[in-house]
Structures are given as structure tokens and as C-alpha cells.
Length: 95
Image 1 (cartoon, one colour):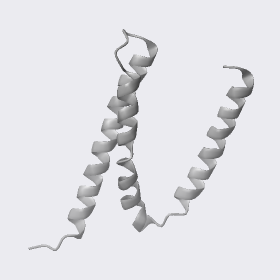
Image 2: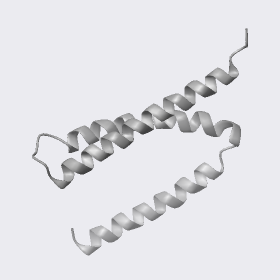
Image 3: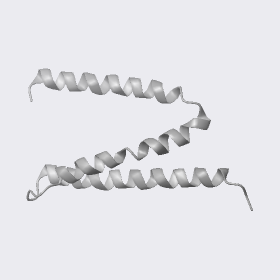
Image 4: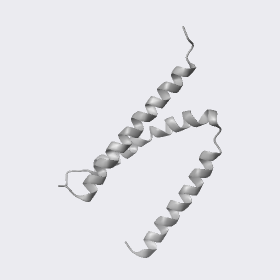
């Protein structure tokens, strides 16, 4: 990877960080939990990518990083569904 590509990737990362921070800071608190728990389900895409990255190769850096990404994305998806379940239980009528 040459310096120009690295500079473009760094620029995209910094720009995405600022835009993401601005978008999240504008969300009202009562909508934050439903939006975040719904967006955590998108981590399923990360799980598929992590499975591909940890493919049939022998142990390599990409395999180790793929397995780490798989574990973290799975934790994110499960946590997102747990938050959604807890939020929905708060709004159910008590018997």
C-alpha cells in the first residue's frame, strides 16, 4: 500500500468519525436505544465478513483477526438483541 492510498483511507476514517459523532449527538435520548439496538443487528454483515476472513487458510494474521472480528461481532449482535428485548419489556403492559 502506497502513501497516497493510506492518506485517502485515513481521510475517510477521520471524516466518517466526525460525521458519525455529529449524527449520533443529534439523536434524542428517547430514540437512542431503539436506533442503536436496531443498528447492532447490522453486525450480522460483519459476522459474514469475519467468517470469510477466517477462511480455510492455515493460521495467519488474517485468520486470527477474522476470528477476533467474529467473536466481537457476535457479542455485538447478542447485546443488541438483549437491549431490544429489555426495552420492549419496559413498554409492555403489566398484568
